[in-house]
Structures are given as structure tokens and as C-alpha cells.
Image 1 (cartoon, rainbow, N blue to C red):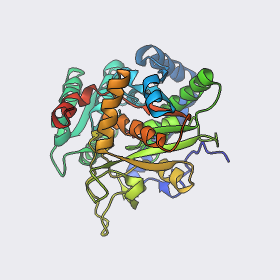
Image 2: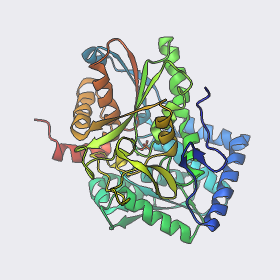
Image 3: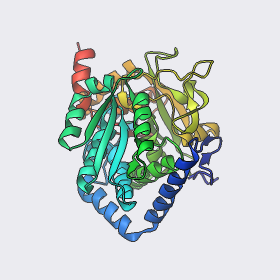
Image 4: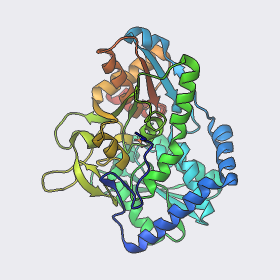
Length: 396
Ligand SMILES: *Cc1c(COP(=O)(O)O)cnc(C)c1O
């Protein structure tokens, strides 16, 4: 079965996705979709994007055999090193694409939300490079937790707007950014931070992230002569994971794991595991598995990793869960923190707390298996998390 699935003409992956927005906005989103499809086929657009991915971002990012970890866990653990990208995570891959698309459409400004600040920094970077204005909406709680990234955005000449409503995290930031966008969509492009939002955004972000899986499959086969037995990535909105997964969806022998944040536990408000605990609902203009109470009120999402605490998840992940091609599993805060320290101590690589979730699941899998080839997407580096971890989870 062909599983490199595109959405249907209404923007659905199975039951999920779509466009729950006004008719006026639908017309604008149709223009964005048309511009995207044209850009994809345009040799000049692709040449420029490929040039920047190679010489500005530093792609391809390596696949690294983590020998010390592998010995300890009795499996061969490989890391796709998205942490080595310019700006320190996978997000630059779709930000360059989105800003190039905005520029192609004649927009003057990009607007976005950010959680950990990684998307904000990556977008501000791409906007600085390509000469567009950039407004970033960020929850007040996240602003305090991720100060270095806030400062980076300011240095890059982006405007950082503090969002004080609700828990002051990612969901509220999306709400406010979307409001600002709707008021000025003729001049502005919404540059969403993951494979979420109304169609065509999930499809667009997925397209620009798919380079991760394309590279990883080729690199892995070059190094090992076989495909990996299992691939693992963390799932917030789902962009780094779908980027990796797309390279392997049609390889039936490859087990695929999407790791959701269990946070402090299974109770409402303690985690952000949308597929594991969510029910079908609509958020930010699209249908997905959504954390909600029995009256349909959206729950606060929580994870120690700011970049994962979103109550919804990309529609294609919901579909891949339905058809059983990807297994969605969970890792809690403490397991992620342990993995954060372990990779640092054994390999000299400080991972992002988000990526630490994927790594922690590789360790869990290792309890059940031996001598398997496991490829983990190391979606970002941990510089942004160092202050927080040292203060809140000191190693004793
Ligand atoms: C934002 C972020 C994530 C989560 O976003 P996805 O869209 O699920 O990939 C994961 N890892 C890092 C390093 C991030 O910055």
C-alpha cells in the first residue's frame, strides 16, 4: 500500500485535517496552496531552497552511530543530527520554505507563534535573511523559561509579543498570532511552526521537512547496507517526526514510533499526549486528536519540553495512528531528563528536551530487544534548556 499520503482535495487525511475557517480566509488559503504548488514545480525556487539548505543550514545533517550508548543498551543506536543545523533544530527547514513562499506571494511580513522559542528563532532567522518583517507571539510562561531564545529573536530584529492569557504557553500564543494574522492577511503570511493548522499548512510544512527522512534513509543504507529496524521521533505538533517518517512509510519492515510527552502523568492537564489521550475535536481551524474534558473544553497541555506542550497534533499523525502504520507511545518528564543527561555524559551531545523524549524511548525499546538498528531523530540541541535543567533537575 502506498503510504506517502497526501491530503484529499478538502485537506483531509482520513478523518483529520480540513479547513474550519471563514470563507474569506478559505480564499486566501487557496491562494497560498496554489502558490505552494507552483513553487514546488519551479526550478528557480528549488535551486534557491537547495542552495540555502546546503550552504546556510549545513545539510545534509549527519547520521551518527552513538557507540557508547549502543554498548550500554545492547542495540545499535543512530542519531539523525538535526541539532547541528543552523539555529539548532529541524525548524529552519520549514521556516526557509515558508518565508520564501511568503516572499514569492509578495507578502511584507511573517507572523507566527512559538513555544520553546525554536520556531521563533528559526523564523526570525529566515526573515532576516530574506528581508521580511517578523512578528512572534509567545506565551509569558515560555518567555521566562526560554530567555536566550527571546534575546536571539530580538537581535534578529523580530518583534516578540508576550501572550498573557491562559497558561501562557503555546496554545494561547497560536490563538493570539492567528487573530493578528486574520486582521492583516493581505500583507502577511502566517508561518506556522508545525504540521498543524488548517489545510494547506500541514501539507506545506510536511513537504519542507521531508528532506529529513529522505536524507536519513539514504545515509543509513549507505552506512549499514540495510534499513533500520526501528525509527523514533518525538511528536509535539509533529513536524520533525513526519519529516523522518515520510522517508520510511513504505518500508514495511521498519517499525515507526512517535513519542508523545507524558509529562507528570496520565491525569488531565499533566501531559501533552494528544493521540494517546485525546478525542476528536477542532482546534486552530483543523480536526485532530485533541486533549479535552468530557464537555469538550480544551485542556492545558503540559510537558517539561516547551516545544511539545500543544493540546492537538498534526492530522496526518492521527491518520497514521488510525491505520496502524505508526505506533504512538509516551515518555514522561523524568525519563526525558535522564536521557538528556545520559546522551550528554556518554556521547558529549546535549540534546533538546524535546528530542530527549525520542531518545528515552530508544532506551525503553532496548529493554525488549537486542542488536537492533534503531534510528532516533535528534530534532534539536539543548542549549536553550541548560539553565532550566540545571536549576530544576540538578544532577546529584
Ligand atoms: C519544536 C520542536 C519540537 C516539536 O515540534 P514538532 O513539530 O513536533 O517537531 C521537537 N524538537 C525540537 C528541538 C523543537 O524545537
